[in-house]
View 1 (cartoon, rainbow, N blue to C red):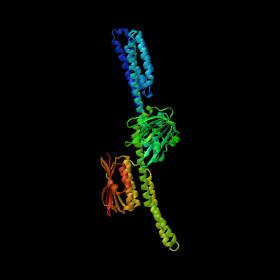
View 2: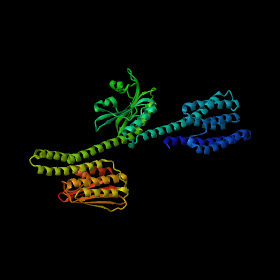
View 3: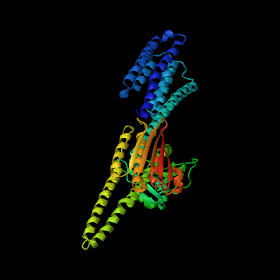
View 4: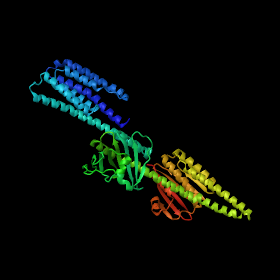
Amino acid sequence: MSPHETDRRHLERQIVFARPIVVLLSILALLQQPHPEEAKRTISFLVAYLLLALAVIPLERSLRKRAWHLPIACDLLALGVFMYITPLSVPVWFPYLFVCWVAGMRWGLRAAVPLAGALALILVLLTAVRGEIGWMRVVAWMGLLGGTFGGGASLAFLADRSRHFASQNDFFSHITATLQVDQGLAESLRLMLEELARAFDAEVALLAYRDSDLERIFIWRLKAGESERLIPESYPLARADGFLLDDMEATICWNSLEGPGNGFGWDRRDGRALKTLPRLPGPTQNELNLRSMLSVAFDQSGQAAGRIFLLNGRKPFERPDLAWLERIARHIGPSLENVFLLRHVRARAIEGERSRISRDLHDGILQSLLSIEIQLDVLRRKVGSHPEQAEASLGNLQATVKNEGAELRRLVTDLRPLRVQSADLVDLMHGFAERYRNESALALDVIIESADLHAPDRVCREIFQIYREALNNIKKHAKASHVVVKLTQDDSRIVLVVDDNGEGFSFAGRFTGDELDRLRLGPISIKERTRTVGGFLTVESNPGHGARLTIEVPLG
């Protein structure tokens, strides 16, 4: 159930439970009169209406899936009958105020206030006709009319505010739901801009974002009714004034840009009116075919990072529209920040993975291909004079090509998406160890002390990737003859240890991941993978005598 649906049902439930209470108050008011026997017919009617109001409670509850509720026309009809048959006016005030409150809740203030005025006039006229006040007591009559109308209009106002608050909560919930990190940046912004364009009846919704790291301005533009994936336009920071204006703290509306224009705005920090309203440059106005606009800034890390624009409204924008958009921008700011941060993290992760692949290709296969090219050139020169040597060299080249093919196959396999669950981790580690022994001359012992591992899938995936990458690095660089891998888990952590007797790293001692970063040492990819799961890396190196990697991941 959506938050809006919950709010709407809450308001309707208030009406359902308030109805019998109001009717009961009217009955009590009649019974308190000096001669209640004169109101027997009225009391009978109210008792019947009370029974109906009580019956409506379970009925509306059983039909809540259909969003059914007793129409306000029924309450108006009951009020009219009550006003006609009751000998007294005071008890009528309770259902009168109730009807005004329900009208404000369901119809809004514009419809409820005229209704309250008409009902108040009818009620006072009936009071006068019955002689409860004299026709010549004009002041008392007008005071009673004003007081009755004021009470009804006040309740209608309170109900309208409750309805308006529920509607705003619904919109906040709805637009926040569009900004989901798992949808990706483009789809999240498309859905958000679509909601804004629809809510403000604008032809175009636009978001401008300043990316300080890339020193670019990114623009996402959506025309109302479009559903295609948004592709951002990118501009240098020199065009910041074109889309971010020259005052990031300004909240601005332009309803006309011809000549001096027609607009208003204020400083979002203190609400003071702006004497000079910033404008978009002429070329940008022409590019956007701009006729009118609302524009507010949104924050990241407490600083203005971009702007939201609603362009070419189908009716003139008003001050409440601009204030409402400013509230929306404040509300969605943290969600926008999360989406942009995820984009940044993903970009860094992609960049890091590309760098790792580039290093692997450069240090491995590309170097081997260069060596093969040189050897082939040598063979071409001596194939005629030394055929025996050429044949032996070709055999060596064939073995090299076969090994590099296997290495390339392994690299491609490593690039495929890997799904690892805790139930599969042990089998995957043993399976990889078996292939590893067949492809290399190293002795490998895999010791898994926990028979039943329980860890999040993402932790298991990164643990396996680290395990696989560490073994491949040892095979390629360490010149080791024996490797021991140990995996343990307790209630609070999972620990992976990879120990080899090779040449070790170029440094000696025991270092944490942060210390390795400061020294620019250690396996980059393994450090990054460890951090993604909140783990801690320790590297112990003894040049000429081996190295040990310890990865500890908390599970709490």
